[in-house]
Amino acid sequence: MDIFAALQTSVSGLKSQSYAIGNISGNIANSQTTGYKRIDTSFVDLIADQTPGRESAGSVFAQARLTNAMQGNVIATQTPTNMAIQGSGFFVVQNRTGDANGQTAFTGVNAYTRRGDFSIDKEGYLVNGGGAYLLGQNIDPATGVASVTQPIKLAQTTLSAKGTKTLTLEANLPLTPKTSASATSGISTFTPVTQTTGGKTQIVYSDTTTDVSNFINNSIAGPGMTVYTESGAPLALNTRWVKTANADVTKTPETPATWQFYYQADTTNDTTKSNWVKADQDVTFDSSGKLLSPATGLTFTPLTINNAKVGAVTMKFNASTLTQQSAESGEMRATGQSQDGYGVSTLNDITITGEGKITGTFSNGSVVTLANVAIARFTNPDGLSPDSKGNYKATDDSGPPLAGLVGSSIQGGSIEQSNTDIADEFSKMIVTQQAYSANTRVMSTAQQMMSDLINIVR
Image (cartoon, rainbow, N blue to C red; front, side, top):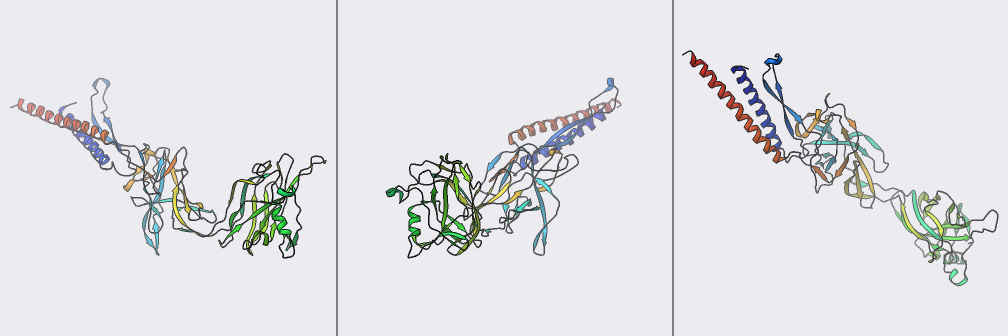
């Protein structure tokens, strides 16, 4: 290498170290930027084509080395719609272009970001601090039908009423029920005198009969719960169980134990002054207390309370959730019960699940999925092209986006901090400054050598 080559090399060193200090400066400036990925500097030597015996050190070239795949610290926030990705992946976002016919318009071009400081804007969209709008599938809370991938909009602040369609029951019926009658007479089975009205078997109250009183005295209380009509009107569902036959193992085949399930048709009256309607089927158990029928539950067609029609309702249970075992109390013991209806309610809270589901908790206690967050993965995330405001674009080097979380999760109410380490950046800054100064020393030395060479001929 001659003196002129040394000058050129030191100039390339100055340029490269200047580029490096620029990256260090940007990293430090963005040390508090949510989701920022620092840019390191990679140096490449440039050597002229020489024979092995004449090789000499050449110039240097600096280029960026991205750290998109490196996780930043995740910290909790007070905003429930904030979210951070634990592991690989990027949020899929779009930018806003303006308003069209009173509606927000978007570019239609997807970008990718780790900046998850999303909050709800005045129109219900989720937008982060960089102005990017989160994409995903909006889900109709009433039907559960998901939309195509589009900007997520959480403008649904009320949940329409839903009529009860399914009841679930987990319980044990006593082998020997203790009723008001059995306490004095020892009766454990009872066959009520019933009437069929409108195709429904009922125990009918009237001033001249004691059928309902006998039914109450020879039955045990079942679970009580609130059910809802299609319009969202709440109704009290009061129930009772009556055992009409014990299992008989002396017969071939064995006859099962039989129970009947009733609900109160008019809750505005006393239990002894209201009709009681029987479910469409009896419930039977073998001598060991295992459920025989119905295998999947009881049906009511329709369930009608206080002259208000709830509709066709199924009470679900099976052999593992409904049993007939000996119970000292002689009462039914319910370990779990629920129903799927609700009245009109308002949105109280929003949470983000690890799978990227945005769920809303409503005033009636219902928890409903409102949207699914769109996540993209890349084979080479460091091949993405950085855009402004913390966004990235897919390139040939990054490969096409792959949908979904694989081995990763989303943490709601949190954000991912910049992966910049201030201490490390200061250390690199010192080294870079020293290298820059050394290159200037090379230039001054080469200049002195050229001056000395010129002075030879004087």
